Length: 61
Image (cartoon, rainbow, N blue to C red; front, top):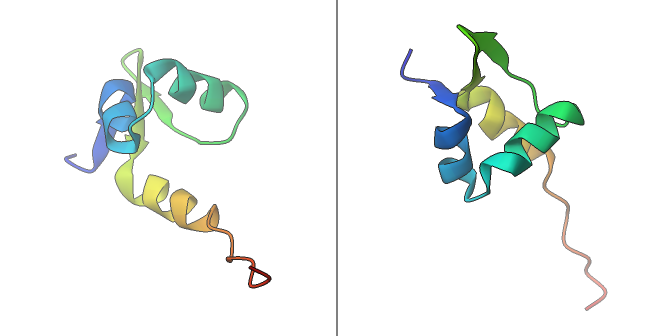
């Protein structure tokens, strides 16, 4: 289960505040699973989601 991150771990990984993670969960931007009352996130799924957020650079510059 070393690929599972809790909210604090995910916030550190993404360099965000924990509240941002909770907001994204509420907005359904990211998904997780609640185990024993604690949100857990699959690091591979988070990495896949991050890659899907990339935008191609605008070549007009």
